Length: 306
Image (cartoon, rainbow, N blue to C red; front, top):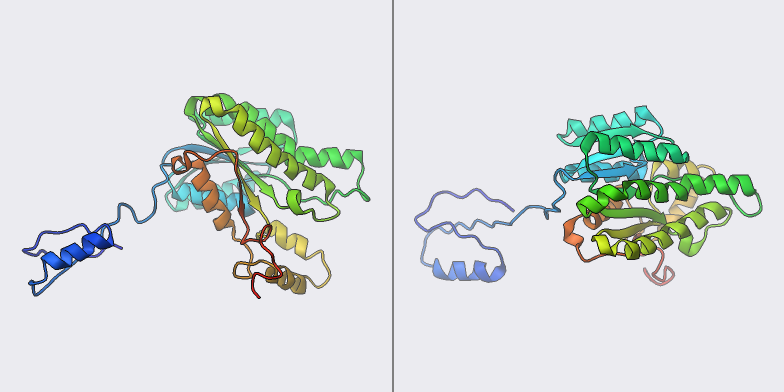
């Protein structure tokens, strides 16, 4: 909380905590006019992400868009990898309009060759990668009863395989920068959902890879964590809810089961956790699955708001 202070005979004092503040009042109690300038080291915690090159797959919409915008606000150079150039460029323009830095690479991530080419383009442009956010994916409804081998394997490529490939191809640069990886994953690996076997399997794989990579990459000082999403309202979520009977009633029913404040998690709240995990402020955090879900997965929803 910065405050404007007129020049006084009493020197300007930095009151960094309540003890300093009380001492200041005690020493100045005879003054007719006391002005206190409360100085914080920073209005916001500095995450030390300025000019860090961070790749975000699926960064043009939904949670990915939220991550890109939060990272750009922290001063990072955000690189969107996504299949739709128009969508990518729209977010790049939005970031640049607010003074941020962004770049985009068009790639169909279900194609392994395009995963490799995308990382090469990033390295060719910036000669470094400091962080990777694996985020792209879709809950495509490939279930046990209504699916088949071809659909199941295709879903794994859309939701899991490119997590591995982007990390694999970015690894030489992450080793050089001692960077960080954050995998976005879903509650479906913990709770199931029904009729979405491939997506649930993909998220179980994402969770397992997070812990596996955290172990494998310890020797390089590379941290690997995951942010687990439960009920976060995005364009894809809105599209899904509309496929259900009485969608608005169903949405209210879901919100009522979210213990904290009976509301959906926002993309920005997911993004804030991602930014922290990418930053040096989380320097001793690795191999963690961080649930940003208002208590949805682990709290007793029947009793939380009793």
